[in-house]
Length: 120
Image 1 (spheres, rainbow, N blue to C red):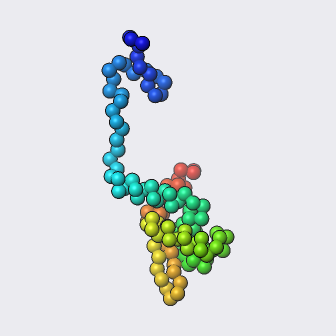
Image 2: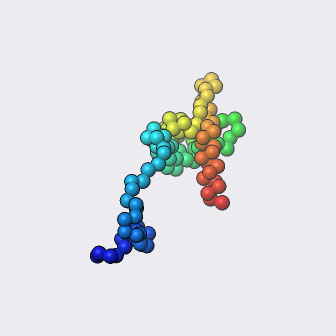
Image 3: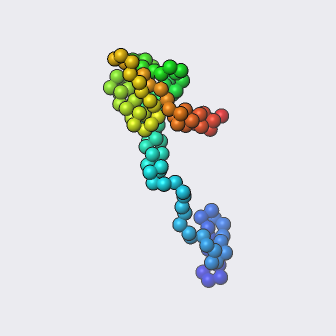
């Protein structure tokens, strides 16, 4: 194989001695990576994603009792979904009497906007 140029991953060729095997890197700290993975994992479930969509479209917040019939899942499934959305920082909650109301965080709003834009 002497005198031949090594093949690159894209199927082309690189001149011999090219600096093509440096380790790739990024500037995102490990904590940010963990947060992003948690966020994406949270959104990767139909119930959680649809619950977030319902919450984000509300102006005053949504009560659990309003989410359950809209999603067609049990109250337990809704509660688990909301808990994970809250832990991921995608919803905020407030208590009024015996009811809890959920609103989307600015981060959640931006993520949903970006997803909408990529579909257009």
